[in-house]
Length: 208
Image (cartoon, rainbow, N blue to C red):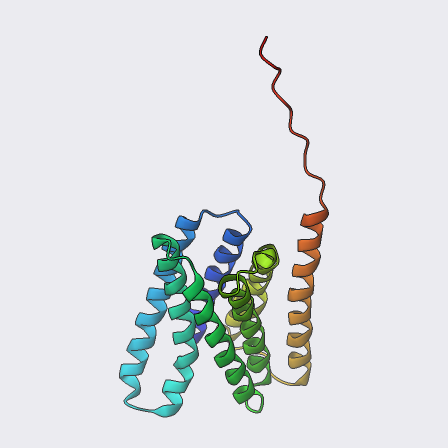
């Protein structure tokens, strides 16, 4: 279930990134986030009920709950125009929780720990963007989401679903370098967009 939700998260992160970059209308992404978040929460509740109080099972889906609530909150906020400040503070809390998840997984699954660190950084970007109102990082956050959507969710999920979840020191190093590539690449793309010359507008001839 967690890997399926990870695939869904990849789609949601991609759409949200494109929305920040102005490529997808906010209302479209809002509906999509409600669908993805709602579906993830339904799956999580189903697993929680069948877990019969098993703490390891509940811990295993707790991270997916964070993703589901985030997407649902993003969707509702976008559709209702709530202002996103509350969403930003929520993302700040989830960023801190994601760091805790990363620390917990360092020993048993270092690759997953690296992924949680990357997701923590994404939630932290939303905290700065929405709660603190630093709109200047909007484009950077958009590119970070687009790149991370595939590197930290879709690709690992597909590897896991095919029985090839990465493990070992080489995989961990690769995951770390991939994160550097995601956030470094986002910085380069943001800088490129900022320095790209804007096309000159053709002025209409003045009326006689």
